[in-house]
Length: 433
Image (tube, helix red, strand yellow):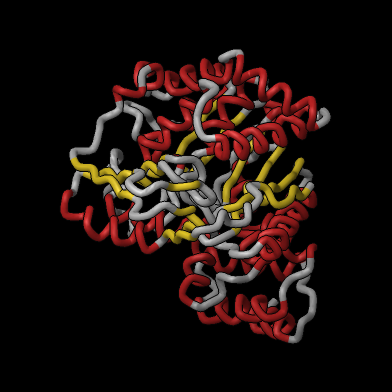
């Protein structure tokens, strides 16, 4: 078999065989296929697409290119939730203890933040002592004992995807639904969970800017999962506006705690509960209405909050920080942003607001950048809110006083005002099952 022939077949819009796709993935991972030939194939895929069968085969081949996690000892109770990335998106911190308190097994690998989107691992590490680098033995022991563990991704998880993504990033072939879907789902399949629920973001702060594109991606990923015998659903959620009120690592943990105590921002609770309900319904094979009631009950009873404390303690974190969030360190410097007129907030650009938080130190531009765990933004007003002159719109937090000016300018440029209340954008556009 020759790579030349595989490139030619896809260039001519022919369906690649399972053998051809596996040959490519193995050869490229091993270094036997050069970048220029892989680039040619990804460009052909970019223009001609892939069939459902091709995409499923590519995804599974990438999933099997490195380490995989065998969760079979837990039966069909294992669940996972993945977000395509957003600003203020701390739903894993809420969803994980909810579903674990209801008997689901969540043995999850999560990533770090890069650019304007935050990462679950960084948020968890803002809790003093929390260890996201468990050994395999520690990981499985904790899952057995508590039903929940979240760690950083292993170095050899889906190496084919790592190589291919880096190549796509510099060859203008990132924006391909089959390649995006296979990239995300290869990691999910390698992680081993039986039930997978996806939070596909759309809007200014998301990779997919329109509901139509988000739906196409969601449908592709759901098909891939089903073709690989997983329970699947995808919820398409809005990311024109940051989710919740807190942006930044420790600030987002504090907000997640409030939700699990039955308080907090309604938009964040709504999306988190929708994700949790979908997971519970699929995992337990029950009606979504029944699952939603179970989710509400475990929050109102305090069981989900107790599971959060058990989880944090099991991974070395200080439980007293969860019981009393005042224990979290505070940034040295802060600055309020005031409204200059009576008006409505008509729109927010979530990506630009995310960048503002990065300027403050809450995120990283490069993978080896250090993060200020206390930095971030608390939003007092959001899209659709009525504002009076002198109201505090937001407060910026940082340990680098010199960052405040540019972060404030970036934030202000990301919001717009009007005299009329804007048309409300739905938090959830659609659920793909």
